[in-house]
Length: 125
Image (cartoon, rainbow, N blue to C red; front, side):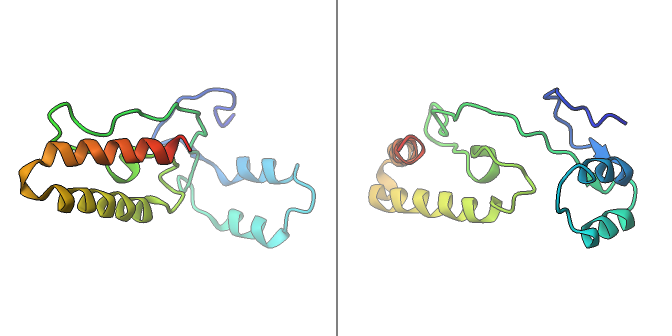
């Protein structure tokens, strides 16, 4: 297995064999032996290769009508395994709730668009 090095093919089923990972860790100075023991105990199809691929940030997380918004991992450029999903989801939900509270029931599309603008400021600061 070559590990698909050098390409950006993404897949939810791109698995590494423990032996391949051990070949890689053998090239790292100071890599701890206990980590290799853990890798050796890992079952086949349990080590996932999430590709690190650059994507430009989105400029809009709100539908044209302002009634649908993206939150959580769908709106952020992170590995699904990075552990940021819950925190980002809460951050997105709180910012959306604040905008909705300010707008009250009068203008939901306005509040989602304001949230989008605030998010853009945060992304490009």
